[in-house]
Image 1 (tube, chains in turn blue, yellow):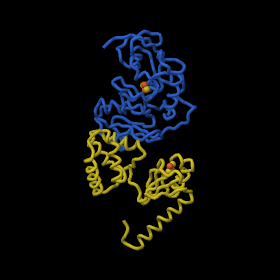
Image 2 (tube, protein in one colour; image 1 turned 30 degrees about the vertical axis):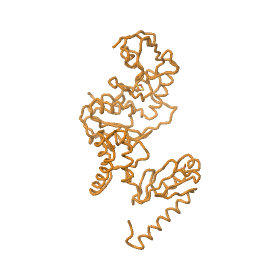
Image 3 (tube, chains in turn cyan, green; image 1 turned 90 degrees about the horizontal axis):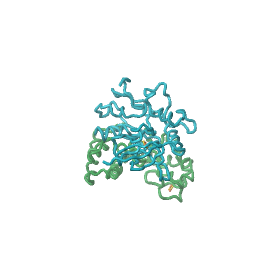
Image 4 (cartoon, chains in turn red, orange; image 1 turned 60 degrees about the vertical axis):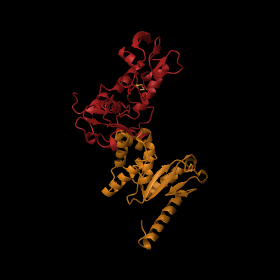
Length: 216
Length: 175
Ligand code: FES
Ligand code: FES
């Protein structure tokens, strides 16, 4: 694979041609907000719409997680229109996400907190109506608990369950605002086929899937 | 969403689905056509049927559940004896279809997608029945009721009740 150079925010970095821009930036300590991307995933579905960047020569911002790098690429991560898109995407996600960080097991390790800090915006948003799901928390599993209300529907857990672990227990179900991550028939996760690998919990960017013994 | 079908029902469903599956090759893109066939044969898509379809296509059952719950056209619970479908297509929507839907909800005491306790009625919304000139339109079983008004709901219910009584009155002919 060919090594190439590109510039991200005036910084010259090296990368392998064809790598996705998001990972190149993150590996070089340049943060781009992201929720749904997973490095191992060959075809990102780019559903969170947070990883916007501007690329010289492109008329509109693009998502970095599915943008392959090339030699001489010039990237800007913090332009006004990029930040606006990111702020709106974050607002949309937060309009369905209960903000109760003080009592959340993911407090201080939550990707949403990190993104809000990066964008210098508040987690308590006011512009959009709150449409939290208000579903019961599923604590039937011995290893972890699942709060569907905090889920941002990034699909990371589904991908590791199906493609990495070849188990395929977790899936999206229903549609639109009613969409949830769930097992077959909406069964409690404790009753679903599960190999206890814990990968879904590890990749959850927020406090939706949480290990029961918080040390892990 | 658990159904309380007896074991004979389950066996019947399994056999029906097995026959349907003979007409398809086990390709993932056949999932929706298969589910449609199951629904038209069984009236809805029972969870055991989803599992059967999943193993036929060699996909996780959760994936079939995901597709079945994604599309409005699929029912997950058995329909009532008289399925009521309120049209909320563009024309019917403009002509106040949602008011008609509200009235059915109130009269039947169920929500969209629901079935009455006695399993007589189920209520669903559909998008354009194809006779927009009659908007707002309601389908009860296969019968079309056009230019509906909220007060007409009562009349339809009454008619169905009278018919039912007549049938049980002349004895033995109840399905
Ligand atoms: S990380 Fe790129 S869209 Fe989610
Ligand atoms: S919109 Fe109702 S019949 Fe066409």
